[in-house]
Image 1 (cartoon, rainbow, N blue to C red):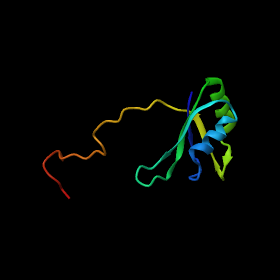
Image 2: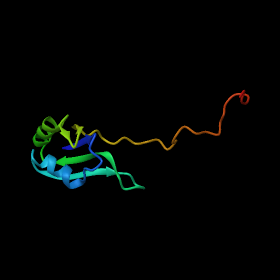
Image 3: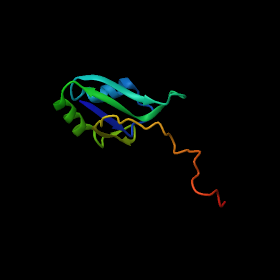
Image 4: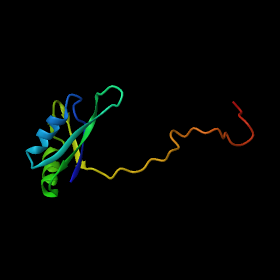
Amino acid sequence: MKIYASNLSFNTNDAELNELFSKFGNVESAKVITDRETGRSRGFGFVEMLSDEEGREAIKGLNNKEVEGRAMAVSIAKEKTERSNGGGGYSNNRGGGGSRW
């Protein structure tokens, strides 16, 4: 089961995330997501538990649990959706007869 954990302390690393969840069962992987440019934590991560039952127990036990002064939000991870390649809504087409501004 893949689990999404947010509102993590920016000091939390992969090993600490693994440790938090391993109290509820076997952790296959734990990854804190970091900024590509700075390498700093973005405050959320993903954990994969070997069994769905252990995953549900981890969610129940860790959701709203305060860790390093922050109440974690823990839920089943949603499938990643494809993003359109439009990016940001910029367009050369201004539509209709010119700008009034």
